[in-house]
Figure 1 (cartoon, rainbow, N blue to C red):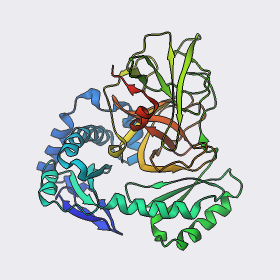
Figure 2: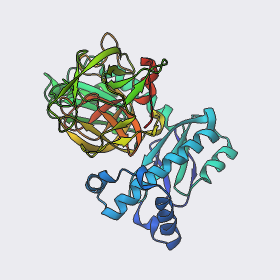
Figure 3: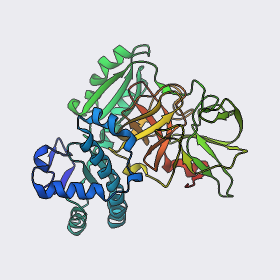
Figure 4: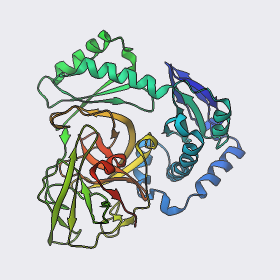
Length: 401
């Protein structure tokens, strides 16, 4: 059972159904001191660390005005700095962090089950009035995920299962295009009931359109999209993309009709990752295209999977272009056909509430100048990426611009 350990007064937090669910409302910012704190926190963030291109989409996704969207994206960037301090303070007791978006963003620090260190909780809660601390929520959700996954193994039409990190509920994605998907939707709950998971904690979502690894089309690469610049231990530099993309690739600069060759180096299609990398004749830069095809950004950091929860992130794909959404799960298990060849995917992929199209695979997921991962697949309503955590398993690491 998850428990709330500390709930700062602004905003409040409640525990329901065994899951800590911090709540925000306009009442939380009604007093002048709090409003001043929020504005000061937001203004402390350098403009280059804020994903300003996402303001319009954030407004639509979260129902806020432009000034609130801009402020909240800045506060999320400030949380990134806090997360580094949280990691140092918490050590092995830290499980993950989760950003809850609302009128006021909240950073939930999730400690491992059984953690009852009063001094640690006090130190964490004193970092910011926007920090709340809980324990056990990740483990509780992981147990439910394992039970639901075991109940749905082999059920036609189920293409992914994961933990909705904002609520602790289990998200089951069903494809409307797969044979038997209607039946799958109808019997998911009956199967879940058999393993003793609370039915109210399971959400079934039907996706229209194809679901899977998004590798069709061709603009930026022959069949996919380039990701971040990487290098191996010898200092050889190249470009990372999705592992399911073809090994024979060329790339094309934006606005150019010229194709440039790429040399395949290695790939990793495991239970944890879908990655490959190529070298080119060009001098690789630690930069990537975000909301502009005429200018690029320098990559300056990466965000580990445990700190991606709830973040508002963006990607560029050669078909969909620039798109943004909320990280809804950092414990997502793709189950579509061929998702993890010759093995079962682990629940370590990241799900984002932004759709994808064929050809987007391999593209970068980011917020401002921070890298999050490489596009794997999804549907018209959500995307799935491999976290930067697993680049090392391919024998490479990002380099910065």
